[in-house]
Length: 358
Ligand code: UDP
Image (cartoon, helix red, strand yellow):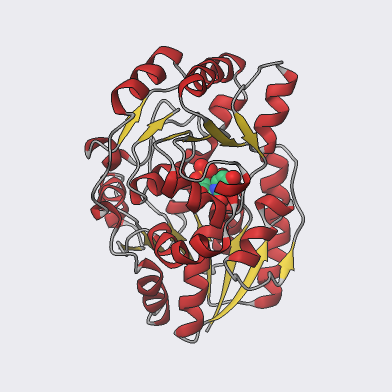
């Protein structure tokens, strides 16, 4: 059986690594399409190399466009590849434009779609990710949910009555952390490079449109991070989009700004930081799985179980709320990993695909 996997953005490379290995083990042939959504070395190539993801069979090189143009061009190109490759199924990850374009191209060709990270909801339709994940779920045949909340969301939307299968293998990001942590410890030199070995520091990331595209949000978060940095160093691997917006709005981030890092470096920063501040989806879970409290710089999270478990607080882009959360939780440690399965989601996904009678 042949599966076509659609990848395009950084979090998808991380999610796909373990699944690629597992597909290979169960004897499923995988053909990878890289849409090109993230294309530079730091946000794409480094993950393929470090995580030993098979090289893409097709590179569509579609990037730096608005949502409509990007999704439309991907749809057209993915359709061409699927028509040539004739796979038994298409595998998509997460909530990006590449996810939606891949799923839509497949569904229109009557090729079954398997969606990894199905069922997540922030209940905020202003987020492009929310639109992508809802539409992708609706046209998927197998919905691989990372959490029981995700399963409940699908049931509440009536997915029980649709022609699809809902499974809960756990979260593939747990697989990634488990598998790569030791390798990262040996290979990464980030702490020494930044002069942070054995030192106290905070890790931050910032790239979601609700913050980058809103100067008031960007300014409020910058003010909070600058204040925190005055007492504990803040390390922030800066997404290129955020860098552009900071420059165009003349907003100063006076923290340790570095280029986006590879996954090994990120794992080391996570393991050794005091706490995480982020608007990233993936990083919220990785903070938890690394035993770190997370302050979420968004108005909602799709990872609600983290908030319920007391491992995450939602502050939005409010300087005072961020600073109050930092003061309150700066020493909090997280001691459980129970929310996201057992770190064997990839194997469960591959086995399920292998026995699928589409
Ligand atoms: N990440 C990384 N290097 C960075 C920033 C993020 O390796 O400089 C990883 C991070 O650990 C997580 C994933 O990229 O696994 C999350 O991607 P991102 O924050 O871009 O997207 P989101 O999860 O919000 O969709």
